[in-house]
Amino acid sequence: MRPEAIQLLSSAGTFGPIILVPIILSEDFGVSKGVIGMVVGVFATASFLSSYACGRAADIYGRRIVLLLGLGLSSVVTLLHVLTLWLDSLHLFVVARILLGFSAGMFPAALLAYAYETNSKMGKFSSWGAAGWGLGSLGIGMFGALYEWAFFYCAIILMVSFGIALTLPFPKERRMHVPKFPVRVIRENAPVYAAMLVRHTGANMIWVTYPLFLISIGANEALVGAVYAVNAFSQFMIMNFIDRFDPPLLVAYGIGASAVTFLIFALTDHYWEVIPAQVLLASSWASLYVGSLRYVMGKSAERATATGLLAGMMSISGILGPLIGGFTAAAIGFRSTMLAASAMAVVAMAVFVYELLRSGELYRLTRPSGMRR
Image 1 (cartoon, rainbow, N blue to C red):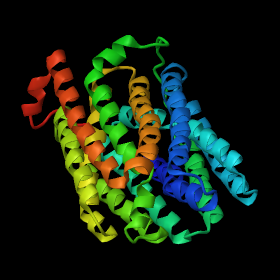
Image 2 (image 1 turned 90 degrees about the vertical axis):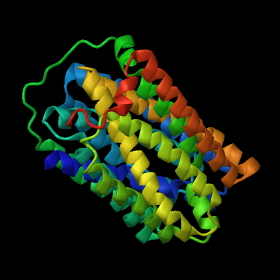
Image 3 (image 1 turned 180 degrees about the horizontal axis):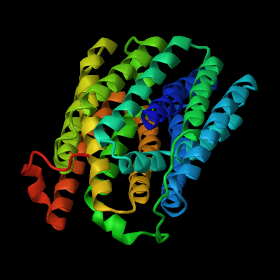
Image 4 (image 1 turned 30 degrees about the vertical axis):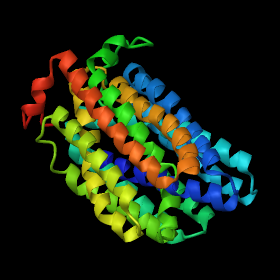
């Protein structure tokens, strides 16, 4: 259970503060929604740069060194956020976000590859990440406006996960040559990479200002954390039961359910109306994420590289989505941004089906079960 414990704690420590960032930038530093999008975008840029580079490094040099470096640096940089708040410095806060984006992007691919190679089922293993996100969100919410203590809480959690990682057994690992630009790996996994990029860009258009949207319809900081926790804990439950389904079928359901969820968000008037939609959101992301992971790991022997590229697609969407979403929310409002995200999920479905057709795998959408990992 040690890899699962690392997954749980590292997710709590890295994802917990995400809901605070828009609130801190808006209420403490007084910046616009467009600037919030830019700050979230540079965080994602740093994560993109590290996720692919360190995923490839984990295939070349081994999982252990990359995992430990990522967890250790994430702990230190999370503490750095406390100093930036004490100094009341927007510029230092942005620098801390960039550094955390890079360090938090280092270790997930190595951890996932380690779990896959030690015969963990990807759905069940990923569920611990969702549970960690839920614990982090609830914990952050309990601190209210005491943001410095919230970051202390997350740093301690990350330090504990680093300590557990030190005890992991790493049998002799197979190390391989991976080209700097792995064309074959990209071509093998093009259906998932393309669909993830489009869908997740639309989703990130929403998430960049989502805490502010929830506050605008009656929630406070604690309730924002609770709303996020509903999503996370629902993911935890759902991920434990979806390993039986074929990955392309999971991906297709995840994209379609995303389109419906974003449409429902646009129609809500009170924060409590969002809660049932959070469960649908959980099923969509659980299916999309687990299906994508299993697809790329089953296709490519360079598992950390393939997973790092998947994380890279998510990070690119984390760059584009917040930049577009921040300015869009400022110009046309939260709800119109959600409608645009729903339309983008429909486009992602069309892209996914086209790529499956091009690769000769369209038949897999009619096959209910597949790989068991």
